[in-house]
Image 1: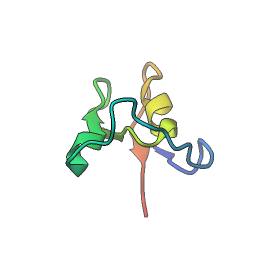
Image 2: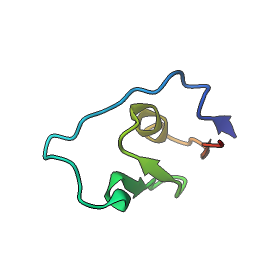
Image 3: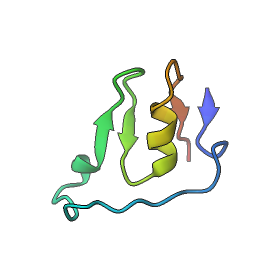
Image 4: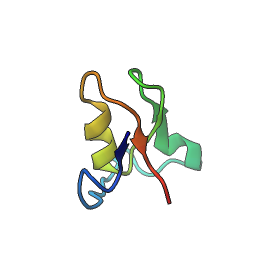
Length: 60
């Protein structure tokens, strides 16, 4: 399993339609591995866009 620290430092993103009202709205389930992806972190989005990837080890 790849650790979140391996893809590099955080790359913050900004939503075009304003911030969501609830914390869960920042996440979506990856259609490939099923892991929840934090849309505020471009590293996670790019990782989960790769075909055949494994889940990331988010860890502490």
